[in-house]
Image (cartoon, rainbow, N blue to C red; front, side, top):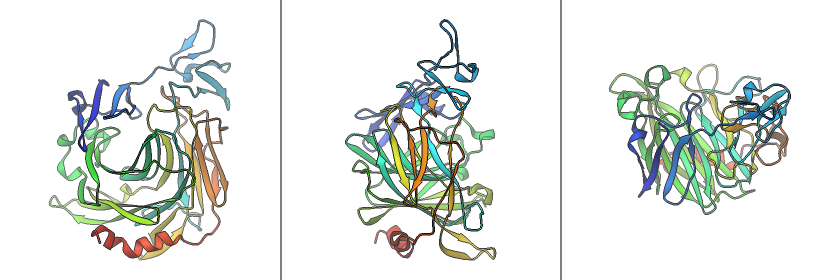
Length: 375
């Protein structure tokens, strides 16, 4: 059921019939998203098998089945494990910054604003750098190919797996579907059904430039109760580059609870089978946020003082974590995946020194209402 495509028609994606019943990717899927070429947005294909050879005539269906002497063209022995070697047929693992903590060593979560400064270092085609709130949405910049860059702001439908997994959007209760309340200027809109379902807002940009600063911001607010008496939340996205803030859009997300507002994650990834062995590298500044105190009163902009480096260690058929790296410098955490990077220990924590709040973030809080209103 992986053989379906999506093609650009004007500013919309048009899917083949099979795509209406199944979505591409996910931990339990045998499919994965691949490629970008001209007017074709991509295609959903079977995951490439990665045989882990550990003898002249012997192989295993995955590296998990290999013994300790594993070493071949497709697998490598690393940190006492046999893992997928980074090859043209594998993609390098996504690397994340998670579990941001405040000065009292508490996990940062349930804030009303999240701000992230990032400075790309290496951004070959197929690179995506983003700030995400799991299960809600994400905002980021993407190098699609050598001539096309993209700003993405997406929000998922609220669809628990036990009831609506593999369902199309029209089969999901309306109160659980994400809706667009407003959009910024020159913003394209389309539904997506890969890795869940929801709505994606996008805007073309120049290919993200190495060593240039970009600023991302997500704002969350109470959306009140809808006609079905379900609690809702609003999610707004903003980006700053070349000295200007841009309002991307405002989503309404249905049937939310306090536990739905998860902890923020920053990441860099190879989102498709493009330049799979190239280095992807970005420096992330301290995360800033606006939270509430114990009395429920909103506080000013605060800085996280630490974050944890993390990557997925599962030996799936199409991912390698042979080349994943994190290091600190200049009060930034530099994430790298691919290239010739040596692997950093998973779950390693890094600290941020106290720093002044970037003026870009304080300016956004003062002017967010005018930006949303198009003024």
